[in-house]
Length: 533
Image 1 (cartoon, rainbow, N blue to C red):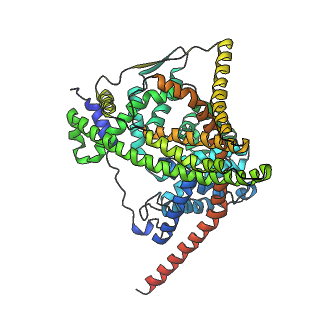
Image 2 (spheres, one colour):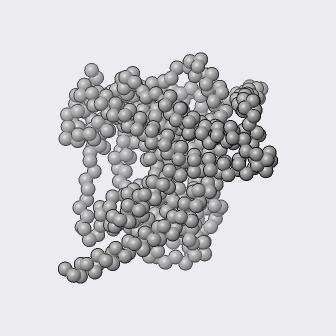
Image 3 (cartoon, rainbow, N blue to C red):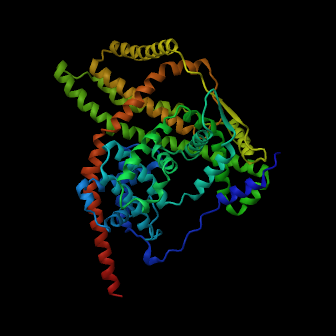
């Protein structure tokens, strides 16, 4: 049985210790009335069903949405006239909304967080005032601000320590063959892959981390807030560098490479957090740690099944509200106009096919078995052993010639024609019109992509590789064009989702205003009640 490094044990024990909660005087705690919170939580459940996102991204998405809604009340000229107190008021409103929706704990956070959050918001206001770029840049900037604001409001010290530990084990052990790259760039790519794999970070979270790397002045706003135009111009260049880093052709391969160690480290973290009093003893006995990892892995598998069921339900709701109603609104009236009748078979297929397909695909997803747990234990041993993780060299394919790229492009285009052509011919045999066929193909692509994302989520803790069986190759041949089209459609339509617009600006704004009035009323009643005592 391998012996673990005492130095690594000490680092991990410190990184996984429960956070010490600071005692906050009751008078300075930020509190939201319970009745207001219940209404807000109900709204959030409906809102998140319409705008599908992974659970760990919901709080950051809520921060971004709240900021966008509140800042939309100001144009650039109004931002120029904002007083010094208004960012603090805005920060307090954001925190209170997050508490009401239970993204943050109630009656726990100190009011001292307000000026810290206000300083983050001031960064966006200052750069928006400079008005040196287009709306695309400011949308990106708002995502960076949302990620930073979440890190300001929620302690992420343990997560940072674990990412640093993982990077220390892998940073110098993953190398490339077939590409010339500066060591600093290689290490940055490995760090980004470690952070993405360990915490399932999205582009906004990674963008915030990379912004701090590319432009350290970002975290020192006191040096540029008063005269922010130069900073605003520099941030346009930072955005370009961040986007280039996130689409780097090696980043996805690196993320898959570091994933097994990231999964193992996550299991170690959860095993130690299960019983902090026994954490030290657990790390000193490999057999006990293996048993804890086994138990934690089985618990994760059960949690993945539950998460998969919730994901399927949320996906069906999302598809129904954002896609199906629009399609029905198009298919029924247009078929009446074009053909004088509604084809009930194609209508029924287009109505029932999406949920049936996603339920079917969801039921076919298999959870990892015992071999996967054994591999996780092996990767955990590598992380904790004095020798460290085994080296990994990624071979980079040489750039293909023009002729090779041409025939591969033609072959890839042929897979699209073959896959969609066969489906379209089948629909014509069922007497689908071109309109109902288009709607069917639209739903097929969207639902298939959703199912693919659910499968990735269910295989979050899988570290064993899947063999290149003929069946898998055949499935990939026909499904890849559909998945690619589904990804493109999903990302394109999400930008013009009419239901998101309705919720955010027609429903949410007056709804949150009513809740704010209720909160003020409850506070007033409490004051009057206290006067009677």
